[in-house]
Image 1: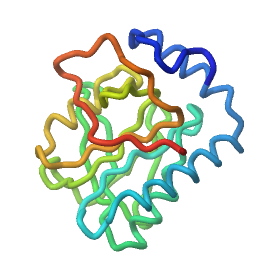
Image 2 (image 1 turned 90 degrees about the vertical axis):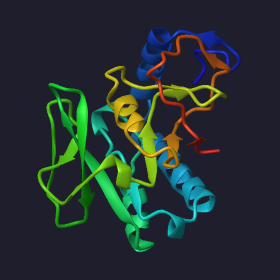
Image 3 (image 1 turned 60 degrees about the horizontal axis):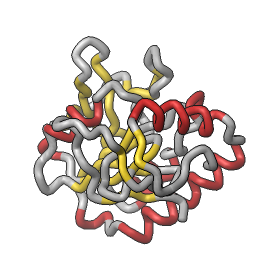
Length: 192
């Protein structure tokens, strides 16, 4: 992505606008290749035997998000429990459910795939969270869509819950507007 110098210090609104535009210009083949690279990096970086409940965001296709369905399949193959969320649009909270292929998933009003029902899991049970983002910095801060769902969710997780961003792009040097409510990531995986 050429719009920003990798070493730039930028505000969230500018980063959000820039990376949303550039992501929308990606072809489906580019998204597929990036998603494959992220899956491979995830497989080599995390031993799933040490995590019982792994929270995975489901991709919003119209936003050209990373395709996390192969990660869901991989976690299931490794006998992990996949957890996915359903958003409460009034409170900005999320409820979390164990996902398996028998669970029906439907898009909400923003196009986010969500479970229609299932066995609920509390934030305190989740061991590892894969986090959507648009861009991140070298300190582990991220820029998402700006609604605060993930920061609120992550603030309720255990201190030892591992927080892993999935990024299509390399980091910028610094995100200049970090709020006290922003929860830092422990790791970030990009295709390279």
